[in-house]
Image (tube, rainbow, N blue to C red; front, side):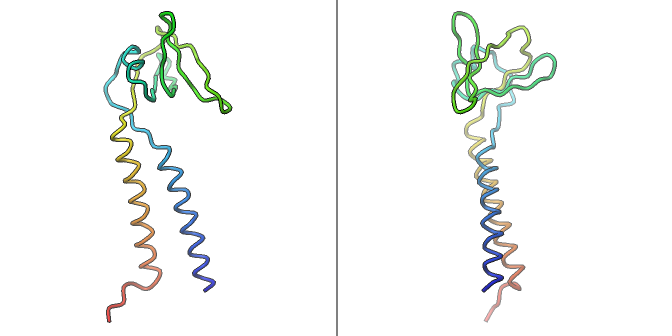
Length: 127
């Protein structure tokens, strides 16, 4: 009984970490888009600047011909100005692929837990 509790704690921890990683997965489209297209997409955006800095935003807005990236800071949303001249690559979130990759991570983790459980229990017993 004691070993069962230890195994259940390990499995619980594993699934907790797996759910955490599954929620953090964001896949971006491989094609470069303009800032104007990023505004219309209204989704997560990853911008790479000329000096190879990567910035991630919840979305991009345009106010008076200026672009702003929206970030969550200390529980609130903050508008950060984007310098058009410094932007080299703009990628938007690929929603279907992010969902698929997240599900595959969860499914792969489930398979690892099942296989580990079978191995630790001594395999399948056929009567």
